[in-house]
Image 1 (cartoon, rainbow, N blue to C red):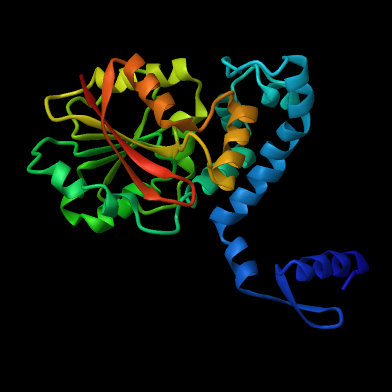
Image 2 (image 1 turned 60 degrees about the horizontal axis):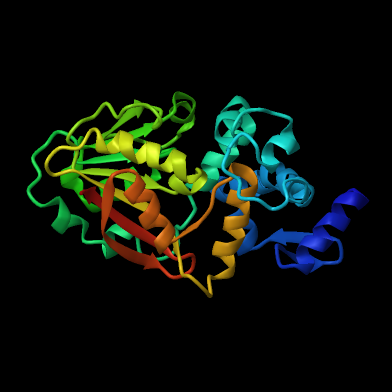
Amino acid sequence: MPRQCCRLLRYCASVGLVHETAPGIFAANATTKTLAQPAYEGGIRHYFDSVGPTLQVLPSFLAETKYQDIVNPTDTAFQRAFATDLPALKWLPTQPDLFKAFQQMMTVRGAPGAPWFSVFPFEQELGNFAGAHAFIDVGGGFGHQCLSLRAAFPSLENKIVLQDLPETLKQTSFDLKGILPMAHDFFQPQPLKGARFYYMRNILHDWPDEKCASILRNLASAFGPESQILIDDMVLPDSGAPWEATSLDIKMMALFGARERTTAEWLAVIDAAGLKVSRIVPYSTRCQDSIIQVVAK
């Protein structure tokens, strides 16, 4: 084995990423195998190749802007790091490798623990809904949430719609049988009217308040009499937020000029969109992940 490889593996062994079975001999362990999965590999690549360079310029960016709130997604530390005028979520699709890593990472975010629909009363809220589209996963990436829901509720087959940008849908490797893939930009009017649930997982935390309100208004314009929005995102406590949530909040600030929101901040954004919160149902204490049920006023 080349000496440089041995040195790298020796470090990996020292932090538990591989086993050192004998001097200069290394073997994969459970951690190695987990991190080799596409979703976790994507997360590592995303943090090294996209988040890392952005965080390096964040201190100087904040100093230059005198630590003022970032309200423009085209004027963040990300634009300085990558010399672009595009928002991060518009620039990433122009970089296929980085974009694929980002989408792979999103399939694993929040995976441990009970799924949201086992805590939120999904079946009760679905009721006897007879419309064509029961569940629209808006900005749903590769479709991992659609697949989980289809497996848990087989009666929803062919009533679940996965919406995302065309470049995202082209990269999914999942078997979407029983799920309708549909290219859609959520800043454009929602084409599917009268669905029961318009669901967004880890979408609104990527955007500042005005953009969030715009996205929500687009969805509300498609409401039928039984429609509601389910926002699957962090809801931070006013104090004592966990470390993982606060670290992701820094990432949101650096890349997108956005934030992880407290209850009061969510209520304000949703009210600005002309909607109201019916209830907030936490389902993961690790990151304060919750379902925010939003209905018409």
